[in-house]
Image (tube, rainbow, N blue to C red; front, side, top):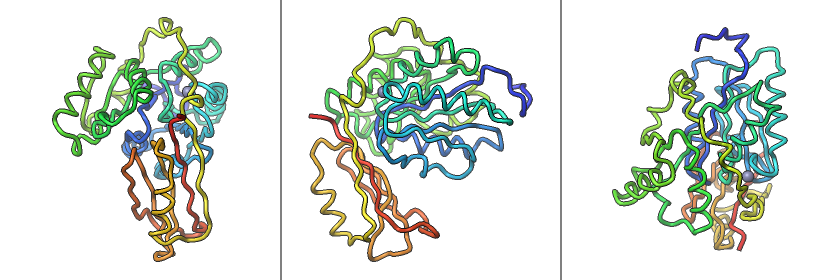
Length: 302
Ligand SMILES: [Zn+2]
């Protein structure tokens, strides 16, 4: 891009990172930001749950993370997203680009529609939608989940196949076929390395979707999914934590957050659960933070 760093020209390009719950959006966002080389990128993070775990999982390579939580930017938080973008653009140093990490239940086509609104068009334009597609879990999704994933693929310029190292060849082929079926024009990649160059990404304008053709609104996310928080300031034993997991509703599809374990008082553990697979991994120390177990769970409404 040729624009001056401090006076980027309007409209500011937006990259939307989409993909279903647990598909690898935050991992990709962190990689992208670590390669940004001091470029001025504003980041909007949308979490469906009431606590914005993703915003705290973003490495501090960027000073400008706006959290949009407790709802989804394509339905209940549409206005919130518009005003967050306009607020970012009012700052003295304007960003060269805005990267939005959608919630796992966001339909990017709906976001495209909201951003193409006349009030927004002079200020920001959606340049590219990049969606993550989880190859490992693709075969385990329920029909409601698959319907949403298909919509996510329909408007993506680039689809990144994630967790391919843990998926079999059939799963990877099925994933590719699904992308082709929904969106023959999408570029399929299977390595984050291929989609880390912001200059290339911003020049593509692959989001040139026929937004006007999308007039059927989908079911709002909060009718399909519910989210709740588990929170405790008492450090737990591993067995106690396992009990919390065992008592989850079988419809639970996602969990993420931090865990405070009795046996490791100084270590902050990150918790990630995608489908039934849960992982607890050390992620730094609590430092000045008060150790606390805080997890957002998301389940399909039955
Ligand atoms: Zn939504």
